[in-house]
Length: 54
Image (cartoon, rainbow, N blue to C red):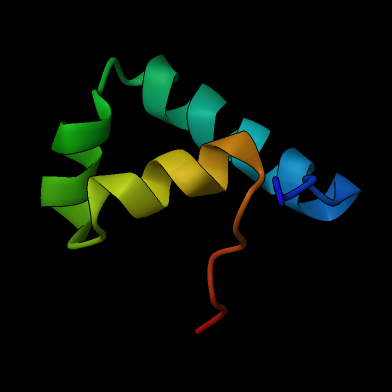
C-alpha cells in the first residue's frame, strides 16, 4: 500500500526541498553534510516520512 503524505509531512518536505535547492545541493551532498541517509532525505521531501525532532 502506497503511503499518502500528510499535510504536515508534505509541508516540511517542501521546505527541505526549497532550502536544499536554494543552496544548489544534491540529495547526496545534503546527506554528506548532515549525516542523514539520502534515501531518508528523499522520503522527507516527498512527504512519505517525517524527520524526528531533536
